[in-house]
Amino acid sequence: MKQLMPNFFVVGAPKAGTTSLYGYLRLHPDVYLPDTKELHYFSHQELLEHDKGPGDKSALQDICRSMYEYKSHYRSNKVYKSVGDISPSYLFYHGAAAEISAICPSAKIIIMLRNPAEKAYSQYCHLVRSGREVLTFRDGLESEGDRVRAKWNDMWHYVSGSRYLEAVNKYLDVFGRNNVKIVYFEEFTTNTSEVMRDICDFLEIGSTYDLGTGHVHNKGMGAMRFGKVVKMVTENRLLRVILTKMPTGIESMVKNAIKPLVFKSKDTIEPSIRNEIIEALREEIMLVEKVVGRKSYWI
Image 1 (cartoon, rainbow, N blue to C red):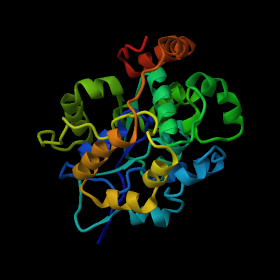
Image 2 (image 1 turned 90 degrees about the vertical axis):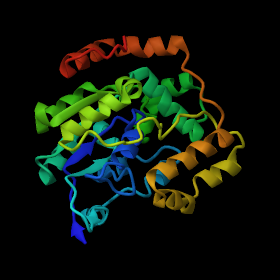
Image 3 (image 1 turned 30 degrees about the vertical axis):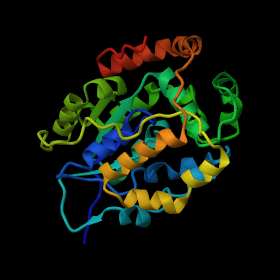
Image 4 (image 1 turned 180 degrees about the vertical axis):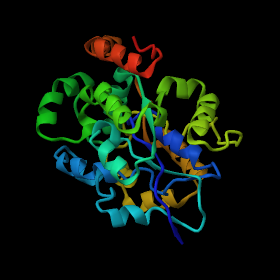
């Protein structure tokens, strides 16, 4: 059994397509990704210091807390050209950039960004779906400052977690522009095959393989239909382990088949709230576009 170490990192953002990217890259013969998608090793200290929100401790129970544990996810009988770590918290807790560089100085970095308002609302729906968020979206936004000060996890940082500029600049400073690829979620979902070819070229692996890009791996849904009983099932640790042992495509198909039975359809964000978030972040969005070098069409 050979010891591998990552040479590329998908550092976030959460709710910006990282699960689908994980599913597609897992089908590439030259790519190794652990069975556990999100290890969060390089941000684990920050995560464990921000675990005071409802369900935060439970959500963090499987993250890697030591290099020994981290390395245990990277053992294989085969040598791969690209070995990855996909952990969305690395963008929000962007101090991880220096930690990653200290261990993997030549790593390539992929950053996936999403319309800040849509991302914020998707985070909210994620927490509603898990039974952790009980407020309306507007009330959740108004409570964000108190939650941040109380050290709730970054998933509760709806607007502050959708400010990308400082984190993007940090990764560019640490790894250099040639080693950082920035992908807009909206491009990824509308031109998936083309974006995946670009990502494969960036990772210097073959771009002609069928990576199942017609399949969405993590369809967003709304609140649970049947309350606490379903919550007990969906959060069952044994069930999660069984699902992660399935081949990636099968696991995703099972999850997507079950979701409509368990969850209601996801509502769309109220236009007035969407506009408020975008206006609050307008200047930052324009600066992000300047750094990325192309329009996002979020404003």
